[in-house]
Image (cartoon, rainbow, N blue to C red):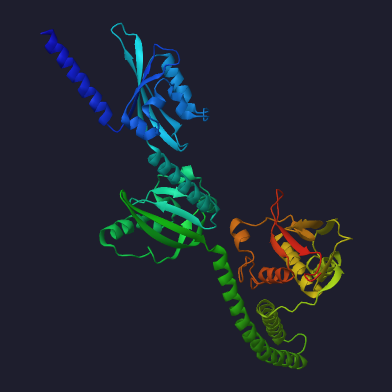
Amino acid sequence: MSDRISDFDDEAQRVRNRAMEAISVGIAIADAGQPDMPIIYCNEAFQSITGYRADEVLGRNCRFLQQDDRNQDARQVIREALAKDRECRALLRNYRKDGSLFWNDLTICPVRDANGLVTHYVGLMNDVTARVVAEEQKREREARLQAILDTAVEAIITIDERGRCESINGAAERMFGYTADEVLGRNITLLMPEPYHSEHDSYLADYLRTGHRKIIGIGREAMAKRKNGEVFPIHLSVSEIQLERGRLFTGIVQDITEQKNAQRRLVQSERLAVLGEAMARLAHESRNALQRIQIAVESARIHCSDQSPQIRHLDAIERANDALNALLEELRNYAAPLHLEKNKVPLASVWREAWSTVAHHWDDRDVEFTEHGDAETCECYVDRFRMVQVFRNLFENSLAACKDPTRIEIAVKRNSEVGRDGWLVTLRDNGPGLTTVQEERVFEPFFTTKAKGTGLGMAIAKRIVEAHGGWIAVAGSERPGAAFDVFLPHRLDRE
């Protein structure tokens, strides 16, 4: 009976050994009872993976496979597991006999005797080099792609079939004002105003169902919405990629606000040119007619006494005639091309001349005009006549808006912006100030809050200042009243 049991044990041992030799996993057994735990067995797969023969392996600690590459975090994982006699798994950099690197997905299992004492360790070696290299290559490709996305000028956004954002680059974060964390996983309609916000999901579902394209592969202009609620024009190009898990859509977004503004400026310039030509002809013909009216009025006055009831009618005709002349002149100033004759002049003398021309407005009023800052030293190359026109318009607006006592002041200081040296002139009054609507529309042609007036004064002022290479804007102020900043370059563009 004992012989039969012995034969059975031998057969089982033979089968186990044959199985260990046949499998593709490298197996090494180390003797835990000997110093430095030498390898006492390795199978054919272990030899095939490492390139070492069994006689070159047996009696050595398995660390020889690491050669001089000992600074690995996985080694600490193994040491801690061995110290506690427990199983562990680690990914090691090992080296074959020919010196080539391979990645070893190593599992170490302790073998215990009947008393629970660890007598041996079994190491299971898996060569996962192909997997690790593929993962590294994937990470490198993703890093390169991310670097490209992050340095791209255009905003690039990827969404899935449900419209949820999967990626967003740095340009998109800057364009829309959101961080990636605020957008990822959320529906892309977050970045859309109406009606795009309500229509997008149904459009995407319709495309997935029918394949009918409206934007994908075509591109079009649309509107987008920033985090602060600002709506702005964009050009959107969308491409599609089919993956195993579904389709992804990548949108390239360009902010075309400046392009649209340039188009509007061009259209406005073209319209102004046409209007200027028309106004020149209209002014010529109208002035002839208005002069004839004026002559007729003067002739009628000769035949009327001062007490004649016709005098008041003639006065009304003359006032209407003057108003029409003024309107024609203002329209001509707005529409006609600006031809500037720039000379170096003290800027203070310009606004002082403008102030003197509106003196008749405050003869009978409590008005005080003051100057602050570098008024005596500021000089600019300007068209004196045109800049007098600008300051006169600002003064007239303040005088019309303020109730007595009226206080108007000008402050001037040297200012540099984006490398341009110039003078910043700030005009303030103590009137009621500007409403939000007035601040937004004050330079809009034909916008006015006056009972009389064409609403062209500030639009003309803006044209004149910008033609000088400067700018004019509503100035922020903690004080009551309206305030305007006028920036004029210190030098000519050619200097």
